[in-house]
Image (cartoon, rainbow, N blue to C red):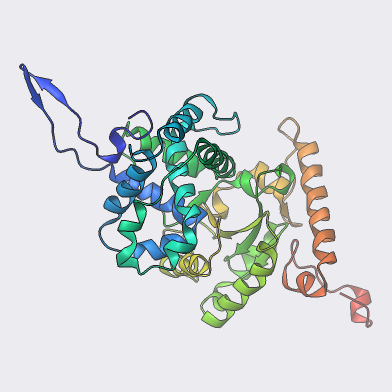
Length: 364
C-alpha cells in the first residue's frame, strides 16, 4: 500500500456512522497518462506495442503492478524490494515518490523481447508472469530503476511524482517528455546525464541568429518532406546508438500551438515526435516553450551566434560561458573523429560565411 496506494484506483475503506463503505474510486488518470509518457520516454517500442493492445491501459498497467507487488511474488523478494524503496533511494533521485512507476517500467523492460513478440491482444496474461523470484532480482530491479530515475528529465520526474501523490489536479501531458533549457547545456553534462543533439525545427532566419552547439537544423520546408525526415533520423541513429546521446526537438515557441511552430504547425511537430518514437529513439524530449522560453543567460551560455551578446550580470556567468564554449569545442573534436560525414551533416553552431580562402579554392 505504501508503494502503490490510492493512485492506482485501489478501493479505500471508510467508516461512516458505524458502517463500512468501500467507494468505487476511479483510477488516477493523471498518473496513468504520465506513466504512459514515462514508458514512451524510456521504452518507446514497447509503448507503441502496448498502445495497440486491449483492454484499456489502466487494466494492463494495473495487472503489471499487481504482478510486481502481489502476494504470488516470492515473499523474500517482495520484502527486499519494499525495504529498498523505503530506505535505499539514492540522493540523486530527486523525486522518490516517482520511484514505483519507474520500477514498473523497468519491470516491463525486462520482459521487453517476449512482450514485443506477442500479439497485442495476448499481452494481458503475460503480465502475470512479470514477477520477482529472488531478493537478488529485487535488488537488481531497484538498481536499474534508480539509474533510469536519475537520468530522467527534471520535469518528467516531478510530474510523475506529483501524479503519484494525487494531491492536486494536473494538466494533461504532452505526447513526449518536456526538457528544460539547462538540460541542453553541454557545460552541465555529468556522468549519468544524457548529452542532447538538438533537432532545430525553426526557420532559417531564426537558426542563423543563434543555435545550440550540437545541432542538426531541419527547417520547416525540409521538415515537411517525409524522405528528408527519415534521412535525418538515420543520421541521428548513428550518433545515438553509441550511447549517452539522445535527440531533443527545438521549436520557435510552444510546440503545442501553430503560433509557436511557424512554417510547420503543431500537428506536424507531433508527427515528427511520433516518427522518432516509432523508430525506437529512447529518451526523446522537446524543449518546453521552445526557443522563446530560454532566458538571456541561457542563450548567452549555450548558443553560438554573433547576434546574442553574452550577459555577464549574473554571478559565475563568465565561467559558465567559458565552460559552454569548451564543451562545444570538445564536441567538435569528438565529431571530427567520427569522420567527415558527421562534420558535414551536423552543425556545431551558426553556419559561418564562406571565408576568403574558400573563395580562392580553400576549405570553407
